[in-house]
Image (cartoon, rainbow, N blue to C red; front, side, top):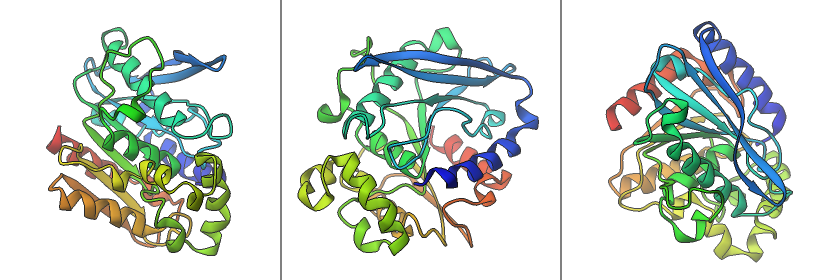
Amino acid sequence: MMKKSFLTLWVCLLTFGAQAQKDTLVVKDIVYAEADGKKLQLDIYKLKQHTSPYLIVWIHGGAWHSGSKENPPLGMLEHGYALASVDFRASTDKAFPTPVHDIKAAIRFLRANAATYGYRADKIIIWGASSGGHLAALVATTNNHPTLEGTLGKYTSTSSSVQACIDFFGPTNFLTILNQSTPHGLNVRLPALAILLGKPVEQVPDLAKLASPVHQVTADAPPLFIVHGEQDIQVPINQSIELMSVYKSKNRPVQIEFIPNAGHSSPEYAKKELMNKMAGFLKGVL
């Protein structure tokens, strides 16, 4: 959830995909909605040879209050996917559920404009890491949720549903995460969660539950691929285990990859073998 960790991780991911991305088409700074006098923007990446790819929506990390759409991981483009990297309002601008409203508005925009930008609209995947992984999993597990849908943007009659989710070491249960956290994790998380929710977790348990993917999984939740480092001292690995367990209890498709010796940031997350596993999972569920 810390900004510094992401710099290392995404440099690795970008290096991994660099050779494959020489023929990448990029459309930058597309305005998908406006809110509070701010233009909310996204970027789209696709390889020139792919005429009708599925779309992955990338949600950046940064403890909900920082980070940006710049320099997203592009390793999945060579597997036949387009990628849209989304900016959304930071928790320091406006508390939860604003980031979720923004992301769902971005998905509606992307689905409505699929023909314009050249990807398929029928099956959209959402992917994020750390706080972005939390938001991705929450968006995925709240398809058609009236409270979290919002009314932002021009395409309110278009579906914001996603058909699969990739969660890299995201928090999943705000009601248990503090008890699971290391002192280092608490140092980062306590202030970040208080900003995101508007108050400390213990003061808003109902809101914390609504913001927790573990408590939103239904019998029709979209397929989920989880990745978590076994030595992550920032987001407890039990958070991913909890989400996997509730998925299994609902008989929903889920695959989890534990990365040995990996912390919150590691070159292991960028390895081709992991991208191949992600692509194989998506091929099997879409």
